[in-house]
Amino acid sequence: DTAVSQTPKYLVTQMGNDKSIKCEQNLGHDTMYWYKQDSKKFLKIMFSYNNKELIINETVPNRFSPKSPDKAHLNLHINSLELGDSAVYFCASSLKPAGGPYEQYFGPGTRLTVT
Amino acid sequence: AQSVSQHNHHVILSEAASLELGCNYSYGGTVNLFWYVQYPGQHLQLLLKYFSGDPLVKGIKGFEAEFIKSKFSFNLRKPSVQWSDTAEYFCAVNPYSSASKIIFGSGTRLSIRP
Image (cartoon, rainbow over all chains, first blue to last red; front, top):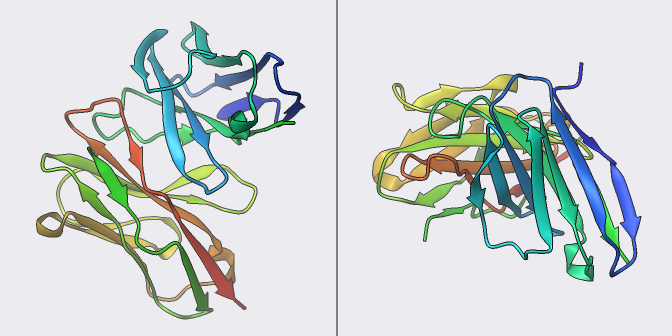
């Protein structure tokens, strides 16, 4: 009974391609997030959705576009992939936006390698 | 800008040694505080959290952390580490004014020698 799942787990692709990463949570949470973890393990938030509404949009290239078809899903589409996009992307969810005792539950991550 | 500092990038200890990992944040208002752990090849898991009340909080696997407001610190401790504690540890801060955002530190890699 996976709480937060991501697909694919590994993604290897060439520069210039377009790819998507999917995330689903079965916890009944209202809020979902995308984080990028670089090679130095630094974890930085990219986007957050609450009930399908975008509430956090950090300084991320507009090649990255999140889409939330419903509150259990938050997908990440990346256009024109670049070498610098190589990283591990983590999806997370929480009951409410993180303004109270609402911890975030993380998915297993998607390791994206752009060649 | 709000930030979280973890001073130790890599800590190496022998089994049964005591552990303290430092975490400081730069924000003057009310905060929620977290420690997450990432075991090799796995996703992040919550170790413990502080929202209010007793500044000494206990988490899973024998970990605890103390919130010292005057020092803007939330250090993680464990009296006796095990080889299985080898992992990356992340401190995170959620400022009340940035309701949806959690800011992570850069992480501390803990290696335990058997």
